[in-house]
Image (cartoon, rainbow, N blue to C red; front, side, top):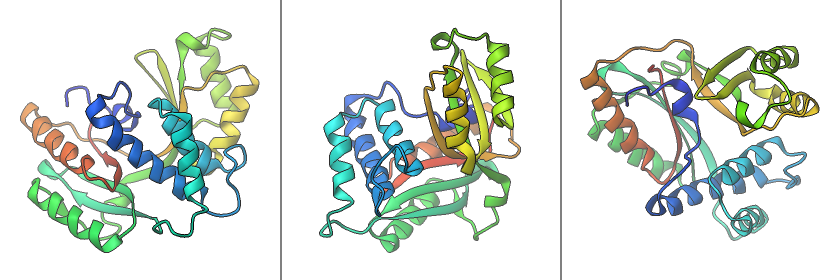
Length: 240
């Protein structure tokens, strides 16, 4: 958990082991299928689907797996998927949002409630945790792949395109924008010749809390346990 910044929390799982690859592919496939529901199955015009497909590409999901996930959206025999967002408190009073996709909300609710309690946390009433986070579009721009402009020039370009925060970590610029404007923002940077690593929607904590070394261990075990649930897509926490 050391150095577990809010950016590392929301970065996609890269360099995953073979043991976890199948589980992550399954989770992203659900995300793609849900995003493809409806009349628009074109990632070029369906922003939610484009983001989901990018998630798959970021973890090297094969193209045929992505296409099968999109095709499932038109199959009426497939289970109906729906999204959920649960609020909880973890060890040391850490505020937590648990985002996921399920084909049985009752099952997921019971499983995750049990998992949260068993792992040292407790469920929270709707709204008591959510207000501590902002739903944002996050765009990653790796500087080593974007040599057309300097870091400072990319930052100015991002500000001109509407970024409301810019942070640099390990050679990558993490830029946030209002969630509904992420597509326009990415398009504006693309016109400048930017190579975008990935873009996605995430819940960003408004403020963060610093944990002791023991607290980091407790919270780390808690977050990992929640993330292991098959229905959970992302877990967000207000920690540094």
